[in-house]
Length: 291
Image 1 (spheres, rainbow, N blue to C red):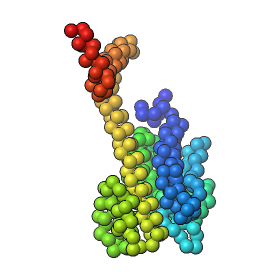
Image 2 (image 1 turned 180 degrees about the vertical axis):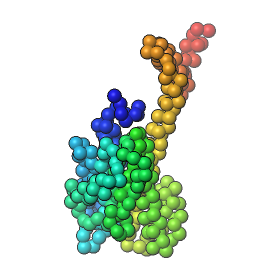
Image 3 (image 1 turned 120 degrees about the vertical axis):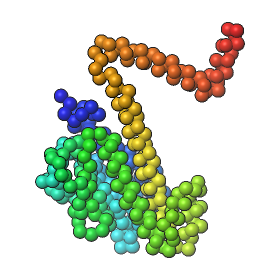
Image 4 (image 1 turned 90 degrees about the horizontal axis):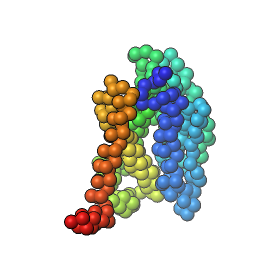
C-alpha cells in the first residue's frame, strides 16, 4: 500500500528523487563555473575539485560552496547539508540537526555559514517548528520541509537558498558603496562579465571573484527554481486531467487511454509539421500531388 500518496511509490523513491535534485543542483557547480572563478590554474588555484558528498543509503547530501577568499584559510564556504527522513518531529529535530553538523567532507578552507535541511514526506503531529538556529551566530540555520511531493519540497529549498544569496549580494553591494539594485541590473545584462569589470574595476581581484561567484550562484539557482516550477506545473496539469477518470473502471480506463494516446499522437505529429519548415514543405508537396 502506498502510504505516502500518489506522487511517489515508496520512501526510497522519495529519497532518491530528493538526492537526485541535490546532485543536479549542487554537484555541477564546479564544472559549470566555480573552477573557472577559483581554480583555473592561471590566475588562481584555490578550488581543485567539487566538494560534495552523497550517501544514498543514509539519505544525506553535503556540499561546500565558496563565497569569498580567505587569506589565512584558503577560502570561506557556505555549507549545505540535508537529510531525508520518513517523518520529522519536534522531539528529534535537534538531534537530527546535530548529526548533520558532522562533516563527511573536509573543505579546503573554513565554514562561515551553514544551512542544515531536514526533509520528510510527513510529520508526526501538527505544530511542527519549521526552522531554528542550530548555532547562535549569523548565517547558521536549520530548515525543515515537509511535503509528500519531492518537487514541492525542492521548490521550497531553492527559495530558501536564493534568499540567502540575495541577501549576501545586497550586503556586498552595500559594503562597497553601491545601491542594492546594481547587482540585479548586472544580472539582466547579456555581457555580465564586462559589466562586472567596469563597475568593480577599482576593487581588488578577490572582491571581483566573490561578486562573480555570488552572481553566478544566484543565476544558477534561479534556473533550477524555474525548472522545478515547470515540473510542478506539469504535475498539476496531470492531476487535473486524471481527476475525471477516478471513477472509471479498469477496462474502460484502458480504452480511454488508448484513444487518448492515438489522438494525442496525431496532434503532436500535426504540431511538428507546422513547426518544422522541411516537414511543412513535404506536406505542401503531398497536398499538391493529391490535387
